[in-house]
Length: 423
Ligand SMILES: *Cc1c(COP(=O)(O)O)cnc(C)c1O
Image (tube, rainbow, N blue to C red; front, side, top):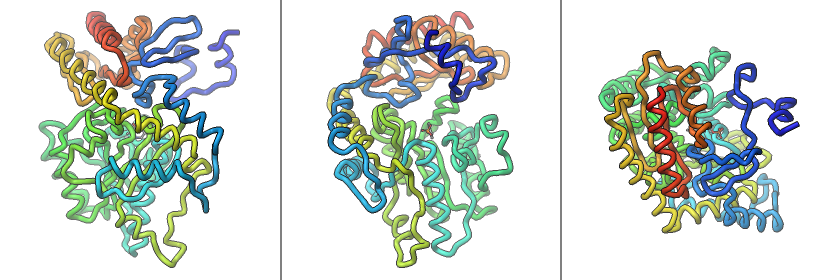
């Protein structure tokens, strides 16, 4: 039996209807922006494997750091113990996070980073003896698949089966160009009508919604409204963090700073699952008390796993090299040139670029569903042509590893242009 057949016997894949889905592609090997399957077919990973892998596959710098850590101290519980890799990650992050972020809490994945931020927002007011239990989120947002994160997520068919079982979440429109005032008005209205504890958002780019982009000025207005009304703000930078928007964090484009930030995905360069939620001193202080009940009773077995911390440190070191920063600028420039080339194509409705993120919307007759016919046709076409791209409905986006070569990137563009001829 080949790998795909053995897979079918026991494995249950994410976001997959196994009855109708194509068999998964068995990947044997990766290097840089490239992956190879069991038949040695080569693919360009133009979405950095769900946005986790900016420094390339099988990166030996990160691998060496992991090996060194594994053979020094692979793990120790973080309750009652600490270790240098965790302290170093915290010290490093303090250099690059917005200055108001002063405390960090480790977990394992983006959903738990969000879960923790929501729990802290709710308990912050509980600890202060105030009743504020509603969370504000954007329409079509994505914050993960655990219950709190799911409640905050607005992509409806992901969460349909669980309606009525969630914490209270109210939604406001995303302030995309033209809808800014509507978004501000909606925020004012929900704050007036509900006891809002926090506002969670994907800053500047909504990834899973199809790289929907909006301006930092608009987000600043929303954050100011929250601050003036004592609503805590949570920047979910799980996707946008670590250079994807052209700055280290999307919040670096803002004047207002969030109270909390959620980090994961590229944090460890796609090696070890790890996430971090960051907080202001004021938030931490609301839990700091002689009363043990005011503590944050949350933790995970693998919290601050030293091997994960070593991977994060190596990844952060790579991000800060001149070479990596130059890669980010280069990919961005190439995206802009490609945008000029395709934006007037008759099949293209709109294009957008921020940092290394490029998205284009393809004209379609039918209302494009998330996993609709057009989407599947495009996906299959890209795979046949050796490029991994996962369109969201009629939106094709490119979010490559920063280390993608110019030649590989041009091949991705060519395949996208060819796809425009077949739709
Ligand atoms: C991927 C993602 C999450 C969830 O992260 P997981 O590691 O998949 O749990 C949360 N928020 C955003 C913005 C994401 O892109």
